[in-house]
Length: 350
Image 1: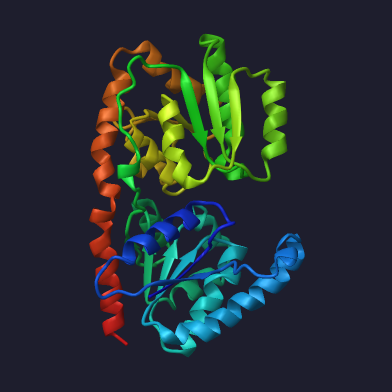
Image 2: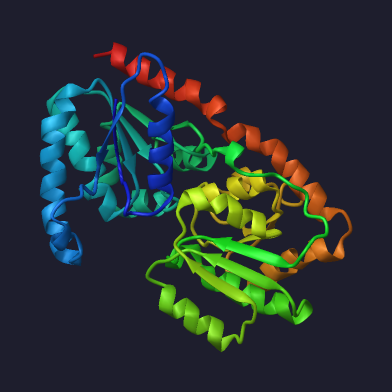
């Protein structure tokens, strides 16, 4: 099996899931799996120059595909949306077709509906893949609107790396763990936290992430006169369990989303989840049972939900206990058979 996906230094959910999948599949008897990065690393000096990096990386990626695809039985292609869809999965699909290799489109973007609506080439291209796999029921429904049949195989979290604990005493220490991209709307988290601090002056906020919104977010934090906040920057996934353990409430305010790994990780660590209801989040968080949901970009609603566990006795413990029961759906043990069966069924069709 050849997995075509981003790798470090690209940081994000696709990279994390690809690395986890590679590591676990390596231990499955009868399967041999390798990675083809969409961002092959070479010529370090060039890699530091934004547009030059793109100009040399794309031809190298395509050449790697031409040389490697013929040696594999199934090509598993990770995909985001928009221009990324054109430059990454589309060449992998075309080259796989030349060599007669079955393909899996593993589409993972919360922007799917807008992408499939606005980019006319997207749906005809997607129809050419042998299988479409998405990580959520939400994307199954989105693809269905366009007459595309997708199968859901959930993201999995290495839950054994997270220490579940009930927060007693329950402290006003909040965690945000999303990259600083506009659609993750970390600005809404900061505005909500300003409201939280008006009610709980000693409240703390740990902010993990990085990206193009970095300077704007720091300026906003200053303008809001926030106290007790800690910008940690980008943190390697292996170090995240101890950061979840530092916090008592997980805050998320994304405007566009699919199935954030960070919410499942918060479930695993025992943090009550307070989030917006963007995209696929209501498919994994049930309001008032496994978490608390507010409308998109509603910092007042997000803050009000974040304060509820401090005003309603037993709410935090109930939310985290219910969420812990959900975690079993997102373990390797639950999804491994689906992946292995899919690979073997496609390999037999060659």
